[in-house]
Length: 261
Image (cartoon, rainbow, N blue to C red; front, side):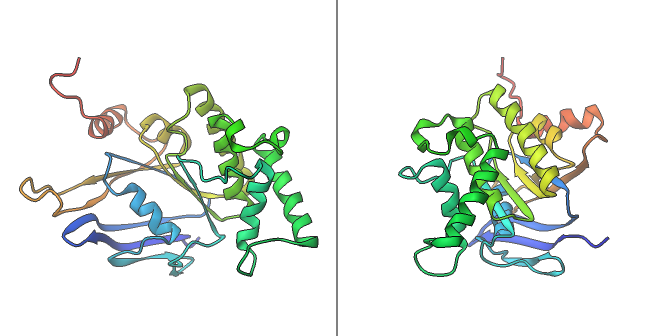
């Protein structure tokens, strides 16, 4: 089986500030990759390269053997921690708008049969994420968990092959996060998605992912901290992790200072 995504010697830098250096890896269809690492180590930058909003400074990312599109497309859906919804639209209208933006034309408006089809598809996906009871509610009437379900529905309506999640559950309470975990795992299995998810929660990364990537710098220059970028320092198949390695990674992500109580 050929890999779905190939990352070949990818670097990203802004001027003298090196964010990522020499990333090389492959991902197969249906894998769930979780990305962990300290803040500012380039996880979200890599996610945006997959989305097409950021281009590598060097190297290339291939999708099905061809350079990945340098602009977002329907084959890639994304969910952020901050909810990207229109406050003046209902839940149903927000999801239908996603379909409208994919239509040809300047306005993104849907008419006739296309509008009716979009309404049916939006209603169906909202039912799957548990929002069929809130079709006519506005975003300010929704809880945090409901807003995140709405964002997931928006991302899935375009029937993407790849789902990109940028700390989607970081602002949610533990109980709601657990519900969202089950929802995402179920949807990923049903829609046969390939997933990349950035998280600061190592336990969440191990629970949801089939592979866990740790982003960190292999080289450090204390006189010029931006001279070197982060790489994938660990690529771990979930379920094959020695407890000592788990503790090592956890300490790298959340280092304990000598003064910590």
